[in-house]
Image 1 (cartoon, helix red, strand yellow):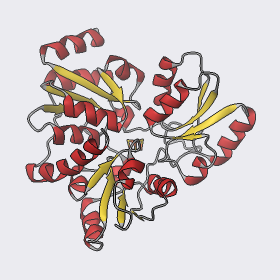
Image 2: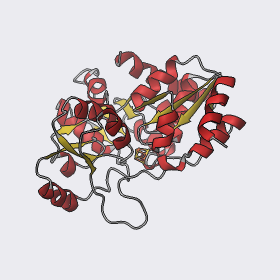
Image 3: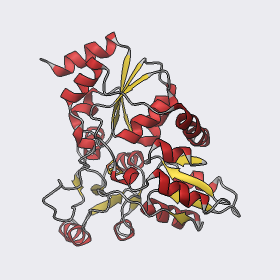
Image 4: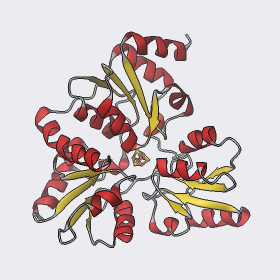
Length: 308
Ligand code: SF4
């Protein structure tokens, strides 16, 4: 069976849209209606008139689409596609944490569960985190969760002190400083660009720090440069499509036989076959209990409003 042809046929038949994250495998990015970062995907999810949203990403992303579109069918090719960062912030513990600091505004990075969003005042992505934090009056204390690395980066950018949740992403904490230095010595003319979920010492080596969209844009606007890219390696596909002649190397991860170099195994759980199956069967579907959805919607809407 020609999977690509069948997915296109089903998409038309069911009035479906395929939204894919930059970290998805190339064949999924190539068939998607829209490929983007968390902010772009949330914006697309908010404005789509499709009846079925196929979310080629991880669970919290599909959940965000469902929160924005309660009457639409939202499917995820593999229900096990989770996120170590979202898992590092259990809602019950986070609820106790926010209760202990009732005077704080709670800003959560979109990489968290619907329950954690429901405990938040404003959601942010790595594209708009600085802007969202700056929107809070200077004398108001802030809790920032769940990513401590992004939180620290935003603190440096804004000069704001924030109470950080101790969460992180396994992929962005797997980069090896020693190997990165060795690689840069081998290619001294390459610029290092990094995602702010990376650790402080990795960010300290970078010429540019930004979200996935920001990094792609930086590569596009520097056509004469070569790059070492410190984020999930799936982004190289989009960068190379946009800039076929630009030399790109993924930043090396610590040697670990249990995971591929700088690849998110959650993101890579989705395959073209699973995407076809979930579109055909409209399953597995994402459901969010209505009382949580209503509370989680407000901080997402605040973010979308502030990002206009
Ligand atoms: S790359 Fe990290 S933050 Fe992104 S989905 Fe994978 S585990 Fe979560």
